Length: 150
Image (tube, rainbow, N blue to C red; front, side, top):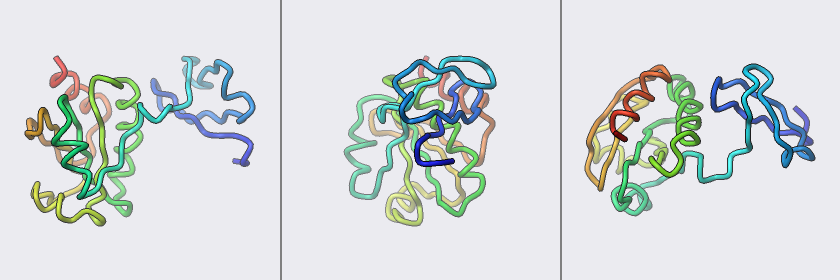
């Protein structure tokens, strides 16, 4: 890929679409499923959280928060990451998705007894309401999100 284009994942099918930077403002369609694609704005992406910001970003958030405890060396974590990006875009404004790197934020990982990664904890109004461990398929993870949003 050259520096004159960016890769934009399709939120519907996950296909990676190369879009020239000078055409990012135009409406584009996924090359695989032909659904409209858009460049993420930042509000619809998972937020990186650390030990210091966990209190304000997660525990202080009034709604539903999905926390992904992960590490860069973890293969299953890398498989879950694009699924979480799609969910963040699809449910923007309804759920906040954050990522905590366990290697860099051991205090938070220890506080929540994270022993295996990826571990996904759902918080509502500062309290853990559900936890999932392992790389779940996209449809199963979305069912959990839907169940907590309803």
